[in-house]
Length: 232
Length: 402
Ligand SMILES: Nc1ncnc2c1ncn2[C@@H]1O[C@H](COP(=O)(O)OP(=O)(O)OP(=O)(O)O)[C@@H](O)[C@H]1O
Ligand SMILES: [Mg+2]
Image (cartoon, rainbow over all chains, first blue to last red):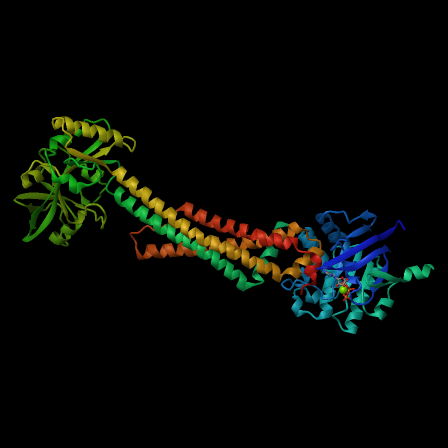
């Protein structure tokens, strides 16, 4: 599995709450291929978000190694990790996380602004993204002037604007009604069909079933992996 | 992040909360305005005194009859015991001193003056042609006393503006004959108005040649001798030489007081300069208070924007970028406050000048620069802590905040 995009081995993540310890992730072994579409499911508190944060380099494991595109990223400095996040990883959140004072276009451009990409190129790519996600007539609207579905479309446009290798989505449809959530999932799946690795945390078994691979978490452990089943 | 983007981002963040922004700007503005106004007042006072003294003439050494006990500036004391008179010959002898450029003898007294049936009491000053230049005065009309022998002198008079108005009204005064005491003088010039100042007010003065004044007062003595040194550097030399010459002429006795205007002026200058500095320091404290306010408000802002900071990190912002964004915001708010304060302060100073036209309430350059830079520096220094706090936030926990 040398070509795997993501390789986790012997990952442990422990939170200390006073005297008690919470094992959010226990001896996790996981490999995800480039271009895969993975659904992460499991009960609340099972460690799904913790896993996603780890994959997105927002969090560090207490033990174990994480190889991203063949490179050990657990030992990188915070600055180097920020760079990896900027260039290789796109996040989509349940609560959208748009900057309220910025317009849709400015929110979409934010990762490029942070990365120091020149304004001309930014404008070009934002215009393209707005068109792609059907937001051209909403470019100058602020988040509070947008519907939930539109906000999540802006968030997806923002997540993809740096052309990342993978999209990490933590319950992206959790705050949306079924029809809107369906639209959002279609957009994400379309990105996956163009080669972007897609990892989605969801409580919805129907949505989870649409992924190529299902992971079931329970109490910090990987209980069930559909990929392992197929091989067996 | 590029600098223009950083600035725009900080600006949007600052204006995103107008109340917070205006509070900070106001706090800074008050501090800077206080520095500008208070130093304008302090320096205005210094300038006022210095200007008034300078208007008496520059590089002046003044010889008073009588030995002052303290050696300080105390003309009242100096006049009490007068062993030997200062005479016109004494004054003339001073011209020999190498450091002395001009010498002006001065005899003063009161007399009656009349013209066309109008009569009034005036202050009479007997002097020579150099009086005008040494005292930095100017003429409104005609000419000043003519050069010539100090011991003789033509019967001509230069009168103050107010006397001219009272005696002549709309009529021309030049060439008219007036009666001063029991003599007749021809009016050759009219002094320009000097306004009220520290110096002798020339508006109600009649100036005639010194020898004629002495004759009229029936005395040989001079009220004082004004000596102008060749330059600022030669004031001390002039003082020594003048003292020596008079001593020699008064049979080895040092029975005059010689004061330099510079010494008095320097004392005032230093005193009021120190006062201005102290006042500026007190005003600067309000800037420090404003700085603490900046820190607190920025800390609150960091807590309020925790989720945003987490997001920026998720989107690839480094700690340095976030720190810079918050620092830029603090600096911008401080700068805005400093500029508003500067304008307010200058406006207030202008208002003071408008209300009191003789008072030069201009803030000194150093105070303006110090005020502005203190505002900027405190804003940034007190912005460091919140900025570092923002940069250190854990992205996962920040994102969890709503
Ligand atoms: N910062 C933290 N400090 C302490 N405990 C934490 C922290 N973050 C997560 N945990 C604990 O780790 C476990 C896994 O949390 P996680 O958020 O990954 O669950 P989840 O599967 O995403 O749940 P949900 O479906 O409710 O989002 C939980 O027991 C949680 O209480
Ligand atoms: Mg979760």
